[in-house]
Length: 135
Image (cartoon, rainbow, N blue to C red; front, side):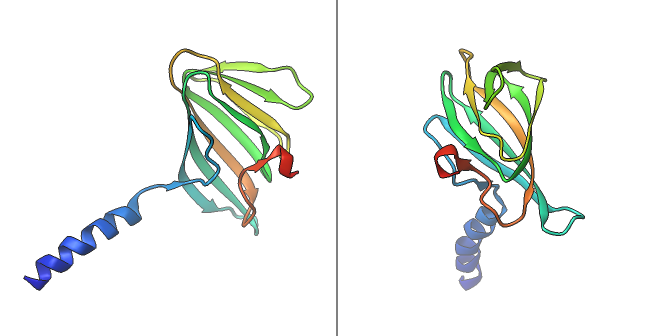
């Protein structure tokens, strides 16, 4: 009986530890799910992959990252605005490179949900997402 009780209590804890991590920088209408975090061969650098989902018409406001971002649109139509450049609209299958520390924003300009796979190559231990007002 004790074995069953321990299994009953331990199973949810174990299963919960296997789920993906959610990045704390959430904004209403967006969801950021961390898929991978791994050290690179260069000391102090890491790669992080995040699935970012946008409800229709929702923006993720002006922000920056402590390294480069490669944004691959998985679904929907997303518009990106990088400071000093004209906006670019991407659809599923399109990709965009965003330089380190470049202030940028993203908006779902489609009528259905949108999502991107964001790959970051960043300095380890720094916050991944900084709002532009924090720069």
